[in-house]
Amino acid sequence: QVQLVESGGGIVQAGGSLNLSCIPSRPIFSLNAMGWYRQAPGEQRAMVALMISGDKTYYGDSVKGRFTLSRDVMKNTVWLQMSSLKPEDTGIYYCHARILAENYWGQGTQVTVSS
Image 1 (cartoon, helix red, strand yellow):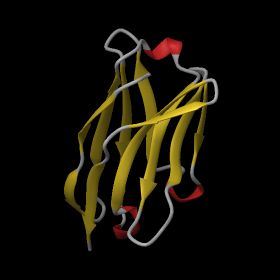
Image 2: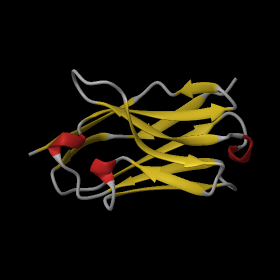
Image 3: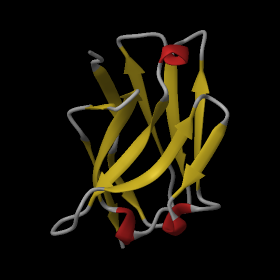
Image 4: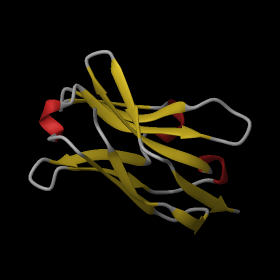
């Protein structure tokens, strides 16, 4: 079992920046994958950024070059730095972790980008 505590999110104007953080209840290095997913209104949850085994990071096509996923092992925290935000980035952002075949989710944090 892994609990994920998210923080960050809020309302920002288009072109602005926002940072999200997620702290797992287990050491980051014990997780096979960790990252963020987004669910926009009326859409399915989709991958935003995902770090596999602590060294390979993947980004959704729509956020490449604008979002950066990083982790701090000492602080046991994963960060999602979002810049050049667009209205289409609006949605609920969920922290995600995976241990083997088990997926875990945070409670979600709302990000709203106004035009």
